[in-house]
Image (cartoon, rainbow, N blue to C red):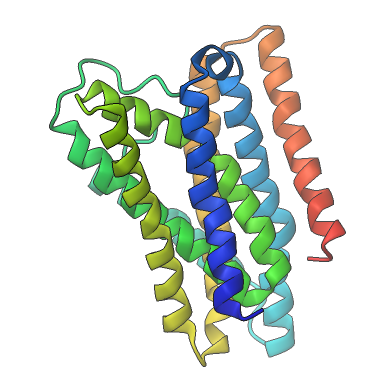
Length: 257
C-alpha cells in the first residue's frame, strides 16, 4: 500500500467518517445532548495523549537519529500553539463542540463563515494526519483516531448552526461534505511539499503535537470548565478525560508507535 493510499484512507476515517457519525447523532439529539460533554472530554484526552505519548516521542526519536538539538521538537510544538492562537483570533473560527450553536441569534450571514472556517479546519486536519503518516503508518493511524474523536462533536455543532442559519437538512449536509473534502487537499499539499525532503518530518510531527495540545487545552477543556461547575458530573468528566489518555496510550503501545 502506497503512502498516498494510506493517507487517503486515514483522512477518510479521521475527517469524513467522523462527519457521517456526527450527522447520525444530529438525528439522535436526546442521546447526543446526554453524552455531549463526555464526548468532548474523551476527545480532549485523546488529543493530549496522542501529542504527549506518540507525536512528541516520535519527533524526539527523529532528532536523536539526526543529531539535531533535543529541544527542536518542543520549539516547533510551541510555534504551532502560537500559530493556532493567532489563527483562532484573526479568523474568528467558530468551534462549538456541544452542538448548541453560538449564543444569540443565528443569521444567514453565519453560514458562509461556518463553512469557510470548517473547511480550513478540515484542511489542517488532513495536513496533520498526512504529517503523522509521513513518520509512520502506525502514527498516522493514532493521529487519525484522535482527529476522528475531536471532529464528531464539532460536526454536530456545525450542522446545527447551518440548520439554524436557514439551510435545509439536505443543503446543510452538502455544505458539511464540501468542507470535509478539504481534508484531502490538506493531506495532498503536505505530501507534495514533503516529497523527497525527509527533514520536514520532525517539524511536521512536532507541529501536529502542538496543534493537538492547543485544541485540547485551549478549546476543549475550557469548554468543559465553563459548562460544568463541580459535582459528581465533573468527577465523571475528569475520569473520561483520563480514561481517554490511557486508552490512546495503550493504542500506541499496541501498534508499536
